[in-house]
Length: 111
Length: 117
Image (tube, rainbow over all chains, first blue to last red; front, side):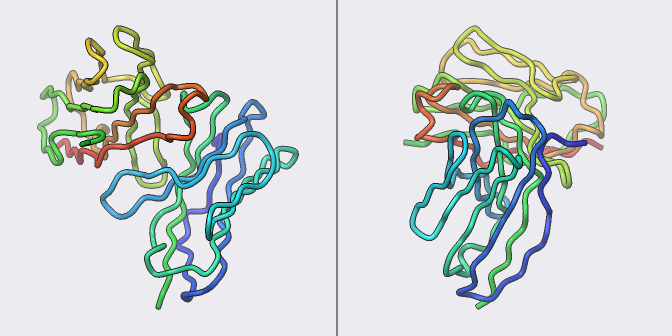
């Protein structure tokens, strides 16, 4: 069993939809949770990070962490075609050291 | 500010050949790491370094060597290339491996696409 599980998709939605992306994990030592966005043939870029449980909002993006269920989510409101990319969850027990990544979910937002 | 620069962008090797993937950052980041990305496997950590002169193994270190003689550079060496090493390799850096620089995130290079035939 992988430490971090993520549905690979693709997830196809119309422009303006609310998108929900999720990851589950098995290692209870994880405390730092991140979401990266990766466009085709580019390196990942950090979207959001959260420490421990709770919610964090940044513009159209909201990250949620439920440590009791070992479940994290990323919500994208008013999705745009420019949001079409692969979204990777990542987590670690300490900061950015030895990040463990999910496989990524490919998101397609159609105009 | 160039960020994290990886060279080459593409490379084809024959089985058994050796080569070095270059990674350089100009942000004075202490922490650097190498990941490989394969379909269905996500990003997997190969080696990482918490500062000049200090390196350690990640999840999939076999067949790879690293060294960190300067803060800026963190090359990845393939000792004897195998088809299983066909992958996209990413170098990444951050101000610190712990929470000190967490708001700055992890800066990734644009990747090296390696094919071993």
